[in-house]
Amino acid sequence: MPEGHTIHRLAADHFERFGGRPVRASSPQGKFSDGAALIDGQVLETAEAHGKHLFLGFAATGWVHIHLGLFGKVDFGAGPAVPATETVRLRLANPESCVDLRGPTACELITDAEKQAIHERLGPDPLRAPADTGDRSWDRISRSRITVAALLMDQKIIAGVGNVYRAEVLFRHGIDPYRPGRDLTRTEWDALWADLVALMREGVRHNRIDTVRPEHTPEAMGRPPRLDDHGGEVYVYRRAALPCHICATDIRTADLANRNLFWCPTCQGRP
Image (cartoon, rainbow, N blue to C red; front, top):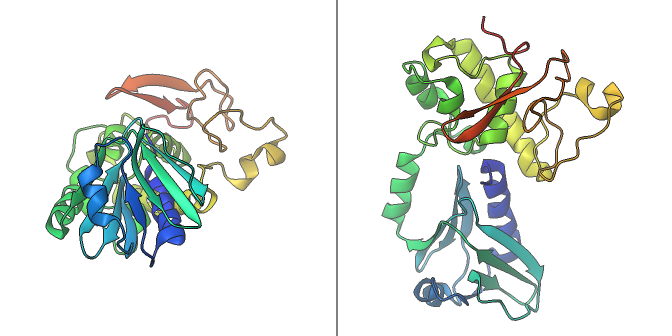
């Protein structure tokens, strides 16, 4: 499932290509035909993201709410658009660009009130900082017996963090993923939040996740670059049984809440 930086990047890409102009909208698959008909010819006024939710704003008709889920994909292309396949849930097009949405968990036309309800059930988003701060997340984490690794993945507590950022930010701060949230100090949480803000902003900028510090890049360490279809240089994510870049201990993996957790038992040992 795409992490929050991808959705924020999609919001920017949609607005860059279609913002401020009327768009043609269609649903070749047919599952969003009514919604597409309502926004067809309307002006895309704004595009924004909160966590893993994308919102495309059409002032006259409301918001197109998109959640990609596990299988959703977005493909941009140049105009004039070639005929769409029947797998396309929503196509937006103008003379210069087109974008096709396939396989999302959600693609629906919603009102302002319905959009606000989605925001209210989500936690703060590091990419919406400084409007969003980590204070509300801390209020829940600091009282919880649940592991910090599970709490970071709970979108009601913090929105947009997925498996990669979860594993990497805990490593970067030497925090055992199995520590209960209430065992974190406020200083530790503030550092985690600030790091997520910085890392995820870089993710938007470069459209990939890189989490290693300059002194641990392949060039600095004289090691081969990571070969992985997810791209980016990381410390522990999907590196099970490989040596830690810092201490050479084998990276471990385990199932936690139906997601693969990765960590270094030495660098992230319990205090």
